[in-house]
Structure formats: structure tokens, C-alpha cells
Length: 88
Length: 290
Image 1 (cartoon, rainbow over the protein chains, first blue to last red):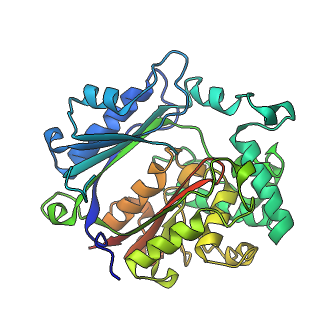
Image 2 (image 1 turned 30 degrees about the vertical axis):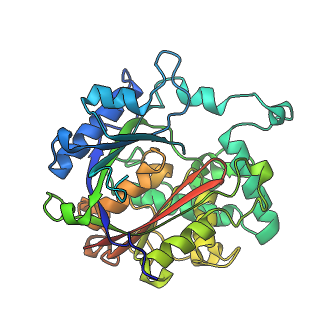
């Protein structure tokens, strides 16, 4: 039986950031830069984004706050209809 | 989210100050739990345990893993953004590298990276009007055998990759022969071996022969982890493989682009994997060109 979701969805944008040893930056700042770049790469406007999944972080650094999808969406200025966090 | 009609454009993001902050060390050096009393802790410890068991069960070992480490490094040498771009590695370098947790040496371990990565997923219908050529999701599968390796049925596999792969290939209605390249979650070299093995690319222990002659390298017949992967490009959990799979399908990879530039097959279909815990959760995604 053919799956109803075969060939129905696609990846349409990829966002990168500086990577390697990049001191003085928070995890949040990398989420924001990668997300903004992915939205731009796809040729979308941030208001188009209505679903958001953020990967789980390993424990936050001792000088950073724990991240949630809500905090990242807040800083991006997004109000997604649906949010979740993926644990690796 | 998309199939239910709740959402139209889904953003997935990863970000981590993993190298410059104390975050990763806090996780890796966490000595809580019963195992730590016996000196067993951290991700390398868990994967070393599985790799050691696999050496016993199907005769794998460093001769197999070095081909993965060296092969992926050759891809990283073609990727200016890769952390190991300017650091070539020979098999002798691998042999002489220090042991982290026996039997795993330093180049068997993935990198720790500051940075982030994000992708956007939407319907193919909407994708047709957007800027980039879409990387179409033709199949997906997940399987999560247990929450901790101590509770797994078989420590040396099959991991979740077997059933996740079967589900993804069934959905896509293709076989392994249709796959042009793989982007495999590679926290350790052994993870790449057991994942490819569980997908069926070779029989248990057959990886050593399968990898001979530069199979996964530039110019090889089954390129694997063409950005350098987590071993030699950057560690962003599942975003490292899936982003590279999408970029290769889109044809945007410059010097490391699959096809004539790297004497490999032009990619119609790329297999991407993600893995979590100590080989406990697994996700397989098949991407194709439109």
C-alpha cells in the first residue's frame, strides 16, 4: 500500500552559522542565527513559520539558561501554532 | 504537524555553545548512577562497550573503523566550513592516536562544536514556489528499542536502524540499490558501521571488506558523510546529516558536491539517519531530487 505521506513533504531551506570554536556566544544565539538563515534561505518570511521544533540541549552551560522551544520562538518573534522539543 | 494540517511551514533548529562553554563537559563527565561506581560513564564509555561487544560477536574492530574515520576526513578536506578542513588524516595517524575509552581512539569520537543549524520543512506543493530546489522526503521510519543500553536485547545490534530502515524503504518503495549516498549519524565511527550494517549494506562483520578501496570517500561507490560528518565537520546532533543530505540533493555543496566534481554518482536519492542515547533511538529519512 502506498503511504499517504510519500513524496508529500520536502526540506526547502537550510541555515548555517559560524562553527568550530566560536567563543562568547550562547546556545540561544546559535539557534536564532541558524533559524533566521534557514528562513531566509527558503525565501520565506518569519511570519510564515507556524510550526517549530528545537533539538534538546545537553545540560545548559553553568552561565546560560535552559532553553525551551518557547524561549527560542519568543526571541525569533514567532508565535507558532505548534511547538515541540526533540531529544537526541 | 504538517499532515494534520495544523502547520504549513515547520522550522527545526539546533544550537549549542558546546565547545566554549562547560555544557558538554558537564554531560560527558557526569558521574551519577550505579555504573559510575564501576568506572563506566559518559557517551564514549557506552559506545565503547557496544563496540567491544561487536568485536566479540561479529569480528569488527579498528581496521573497520579507521576506514570510516579516514574516509570522512577526506570529505572534510573538501569542506571549507569543516572543523577538520585543513587537517588531513592518514591511517597511520589513526593507528597512532590516543585511546579515549578502549577500543575507541580519538578519531573514533565526534567533534564538540560551537554553532547551530536549522532546516525548514513544508509540503511539496508549497515547495514548488520557493527559492531552493526541494529535497523531497520519500520515506521515513523510526524505531526506539530501549531507553538505556543495559536494557537492550542485543548490545551489538540490531539497533533501531533495522526496523527504522525497513519502514523508510517500504514507504519510499525503493531498495538499497537505489541509494546514491548516505548521511549517517556518526557520534562514533562504530555508529556508522552498525547503522549501515543494520540497514543491510553488508552482513555482520562485512563492513571491513565493504569499506575497502575508498567506498565511502570522494570518488567512491557509496559516499558517506560528505560534509565530513560529526567526526570531521561539526556536531549538531541529527542536523549534521539531514542538512548535508538536503544540500547535496539541492546541488549546493561546492567542491564536495556529489556528481562529476567528486567522481561520484549524481545524487537522486540520499539516505539520512539520526540516532540517540547509546544506540537506543533511531530515525531514517530518505530524500530525493524532484
